[in-house]
Image 1 (cartoon, rainbow, N blue to C red):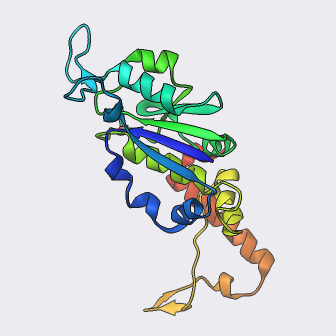
Image 2: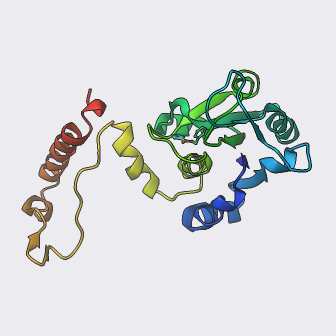
Length: 222
Ligand code: JF5
């Protein structure tokens, strides 16, 4: 998969995408990630990318021209063009799976003031939010989407994948898990997990997942 990112802060992406699984995905060629500075598409010698909103009001908006020209330069007909902002639809695991099927993504990281509406209406295919809070810009949301999508690409994870997918595909939170030692400073692993009774262990885990989900995330329960 090819992912292009259009951002005012390309340096923010160094680090999170250069470690661990994403690093390996990039090195192996399963993920081709390219960062582009929106300011490189500005027209004037001050490299202006924002302007005041018509009708007044606080803050500035990202101007349409640099974004349109960047997209015209970077996107092909098969590219999914996605804005990141708090006004988007909620990014979910189901959307991550859907995006993982696309050959190319272009993620456009918004700025604290947001986009000229024509970018939404005539350029983007989609607008995603990673949650109901406000960040200074869309770089972190873009990295969240990249991470969630990249780990779903065939070959990026080993078989550790299926286990982690189970939680969300069954729409329950994970059950509690323990590793050695069985007694750590007096904090004991539940006896059932040491019992060797696999049917009873499966029942206990299902029960714990349901309890935890109803306690913490009742919205996930059917
Ligand atoms: C942004 C206008 C983009 O704050 C966010 C965000 C929160 N959830 N998902 C995304 O993105 C940055 C802020 C204001 C456009």
